[in-house]
Length: 239
Image (cartoon, rainbow, N blue to C red):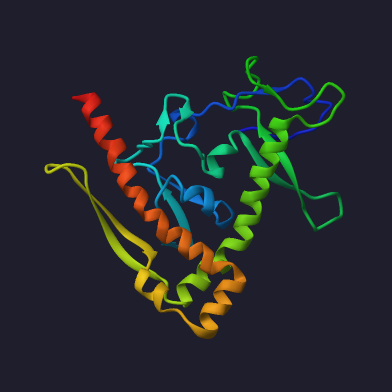
């Protein structure tokens, strides 16, 4: 990797292709997501939670087999929404600390070694007179979502957990009579506990916005049927 801070002088003519693909890390059967994108994610993907060493994290289910993204076709996504961690492409946020200043400032970086960077058919980052293009503005918004998500997600997920709304399960996904998948060590929103919330705990979760996250995550599990349909279609094509 060769991340460099972007500026409109050194990178005035730089173009970046927004294409996706397995070579760029898009062939994954689940991907990290953040609270600000739950509404978009739940329209397409099932949302699950996992306990990691760094705490609870939320994921969107993309496939059933290892390194399988059923929403990826060649170099583009077929879903209406692409999770922010994949929308960002070769861009990232790096902390820049001015000399003598311990407080870092988040700045936009791009990986010059990424195959999408410098593609002559790609999209420009800057306008002719130096302003940001719509593409760069979009990427900035995506990275802001990710940066803020890393800060806000732990407290939101802890609130879900402490309210008893997350329950450990092993998901069983039957694609056909002969083919069954099990997804172990996950947590999902417990609908019974969600329905039983009342009084101050309910009001507290509502005011914090965490109740909405629980409802969206619970509703998203219906998308497992779409995942099954995509897998069945893929198997039929390969027969």
